Length: 65
Image (cartoon, rainbow, N blue to C red):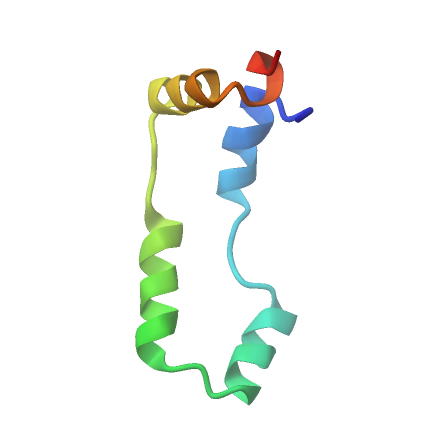
């Protein structure tokens, strides 16, 4: 992977559903409980240390062999 640690943390800040995705969920009658569960997952935060540890352990991005 070519993902750098700083890119991974930046990517977290722009997550969410696009208007198109929101419309798709509405048209498919996605249950409210599913939307709430997604909101909870998207609200999770990790520290910089947790992110670095995860990337190192998984050998991801700049830590890839």
